[in-house]
Length: 188
Image (cartoon, rainbow, N blue to C red):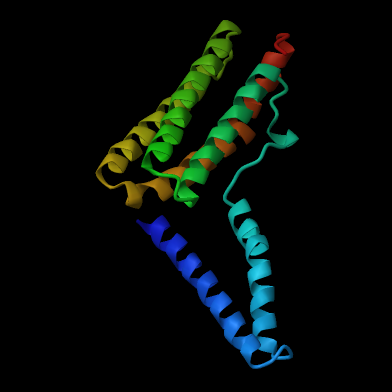
């Protein structure tokens, strides 16, 4: 509902801007009002891109753990987070939003299992702590999913911020701890 209102509001603004431009030019080509509105309309895509780009995550080398398979999975996680963010920001429909959310949660669980298997295989000393962090995150997501089923609009923004923040902080922090250990064991 909120996305629809935002889209409606933006559409209404654009229509009114064109109306102001048309009426403004009736008072002469040298009237500054329509020219100002044209500049505002031309700037809208740039302003929108700057505002929304902050809500997406992007891969950079500081997130790399130095193990290609894990880095590939982390990059896919960021792509899935961005897919969910797209569904949240734009009126893509509930089914796209649900699919993006489900795909992100399922892939996160898959990725956690793969990381944990690697840590177990090479006897990573902080395996239990790392596994507990994964478990606690999934438990928190399950609480969000339950709330999401009861009130989609009230939950999706908070859940998306949580997922983005937790996963990027986990990759940049906790995952960096095991990376050197595994690389020292020959994992590339």
